[in-house]
Image (cartoon, rainbow, N blue to C red; front, side, top):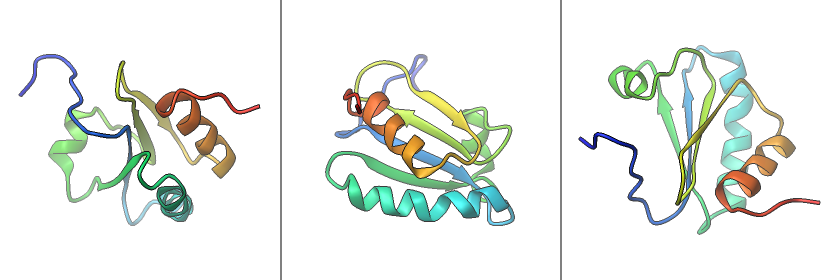
Length: 103
């Protein structure tokens, strides 16, 4: 409904756009599950099945999967496409969503 991006959640979020037939999606899925436990109370995690939610996927311009949308509390969201390893996902969560830098 909004003309411009406005996130109204109470925590930063990560949305995983996936499909059951997608091999790389199946590889990322358990990592997302682990990270959702690790960052519980700090980041909200969502999984969107692009086969079921075609309209929603279209709104976000999803053209390939897996696609991960990092939504900070302030600022614009950022999209990452492809299966990222866990450490790279953690780094993106820390930097993009929590505003912290890992050393």
